[in-house]
Structures are given as C-alpha cells and as structure tokens.
Image 1: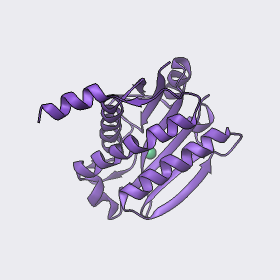
Image 2 (image 1 turned 90 degrees about the vertical axis):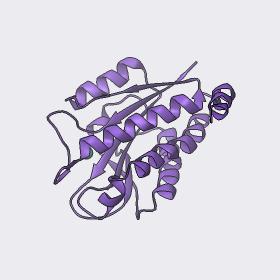
Image 3 (image 1 turned 60 degrees about the vertical axis):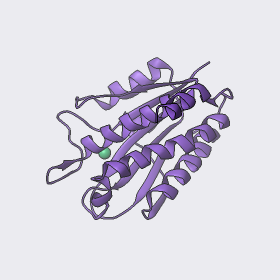
Image 4 (image 1 turned 180 degrees about the vertical axis):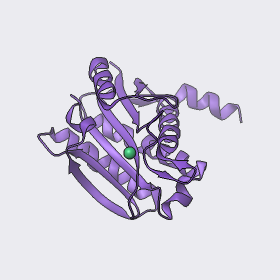
Length: 198
Ligand SMILES: [Zn+2]
C-alpha cells in the first residue's frame, strides 16, 4: 500500500502570505513544494504525493484539510515562510492531542531540515493552527526562514530551495518507516536510468 504524502504550499492566489518588496511567501512555498514532490516521486517507490495547490491559486484552509482528509493522506506537510523579524527555521505540530508518531515525525523532519539549512534553529513548537487541528493524520507545519530578514538571501536562491527539498529525501524514509507503512524502498531502476543518462 502506497504511502500518501500531502504537501501544502502555504497561501497562493489572492493571498500572498508574507511579502517583502517583490518577494512573496506564496511563490517560495510553491517552488519548495513542487521541488519536494519531484524529489519524493523520483527517489522513492511506493509514494503518492498530492498537493494543496500546484499553481498560484487561491485555496482556503478548509479546502486544504478537507482534501487531505478525503484523500486519506498518511502525512500532511505544510510549507511556510516566516515574517515579523527574526531568523531561522521552526516547526509546529498541533497543541492539542496528537499521536506519538506525530511527535516522532516532527523530531525527525525538523532535525534533518535544521541540519541542512544552516539557519538558527528556533525549535520544535506546538500551536492551534487550522491545518494542524483539522487534519486527521499526523501533520507538520514548517516556517522556513524570514522573508523580512537576511534569510531572504537564501530564500531567493533556487539552489537553496532545492536543498530544502533534498532534505526531505533524507527525512522521508526515516519518517515513513516509523509509521505503519514499512514497504518504502529506494527505486534502483530509476536511479540507474538517471545515472546512465549523464
Ligand atoms: Zn504562511
């Protein structure tokens, strides 16, 4: 049975999220989300990925969580960029009752991303966010740097955003083998095919 990962690039369409000049949170989150999907589908078999949006479209919070619930996602990962002064990376799980796996997954994904981004680690946190509260599966919301600080220098760099997604390559197998699905493997045939095309 496939592992279903729901990727949620924050904001979109008429909601830009945090803004700094011409830079908008919604564009960064979409780029990271699409790259993350590419990495997961390319590197692993037995994974299905659905996204709350794949373009610059307006999607309400309830539409996002409804879709993830309807699809029966195994894991919900929301991607955001912070604002308001500060630097670094932080992640959130729901501040109400959560499964132990929700905590384990936060710990693992947070550690891998924090190790890869080179930013200050603002910590693993809990909050009453809609997408964390209304999802029926383990859910994590990430705040990846501040659009209004020097973090923007990295966020502007496509390679940095690719690296973020590459962190998920490391995090996801560890995440998924901790859950109820144990059948995730690297996909040797696709890796071989990619290697031979170089
Ligand atoms: Zn946001």
